[in-house]
Length: 392
Ligand code: FNR
Image (cartoon, rainbow, N blue to C red; front, side, top):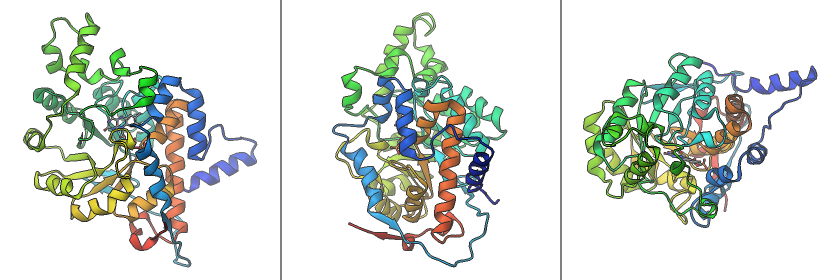
């Protein structure tokens, strides 16, 4: 499958020749700035904010600056390059997926279904969050509407009730999700000064808990339905979200309860990867949740080489700080099997709903295609540690 992503720039320039100026920005910084203008102050705080002094969020970006691509010349690069890959049975046009991001209705009314449609149009897999504003069934249906067989994985926030966890995963299987991504780093929300400053937590307003409210196991334990007594349902959610006791035996329980591939997200230490492999996980995501959980923690890109080395044959996906094609090239060169795009697509959504996400994805893929090609690679699959140099 050749993937002429770079053709997007020809389209833009040709449109310009015929007097059509672009409406959306192309650089990620410009897109972020425009999105922040379009969002409420609370939503900006929630999306842009991170834990503590936000040192780790900054470190995630700074780590990319220490690695530089070293372009190679005259290598006979094909005009249309094939970046396609398959991870855990899910085919994708490039090793790029959408990171799970919850409560998207706070940035745009189209929310997760708009994201699902935009991703499906390009065949980019979306990882739908447990904390989505819409149910996983609605998100799946939106993706299927846009493109039959739209690839999707389900991200699980493990509630303090194993039966509810099992129910979420059963539903994900029934709704055609191809893998379960268990997020390990958020058994409790981190200390987030920007949200504290506006006393803003969308879940308490019943935003981002659609998967809970629609779940048969969740509903069974309520005296009145969430429709009749929304306050009681929110309180029940609050009681279930935090789960400090989560341990490796829970992952083993999940392994017994689903045939879907299991991916563990939030891994930063080599020993945790070895543990993940021992317990039968199928892949891990090297991630620090965009710096939103442990401030002062290592930059995710700095953790990546150690995680990849310890992972052996286990695929290592990567997120936290990915903004551009260059960033993706660097993470792939350091051994990531795929990168997850997070905040940038949320900015596209905030600016222009489905079309905004579609635009951000086309920009990202074109940039990745051009970057890897111009640096001397026939596809992103040729990127290795030798493609990079480290600067201090
Ligand atoms: C997240 N992330 C996240 N992760 C997850 O597993 N489930 C979720 O519901 C959410 N929700 C969420 C909301 C918002 C607003 C953000 C910014 C992030 C983390 C996400 O999957 C990913 O790890 C980070 O976004 C990566 O950091 P960058 O690259 O976006 O800075």
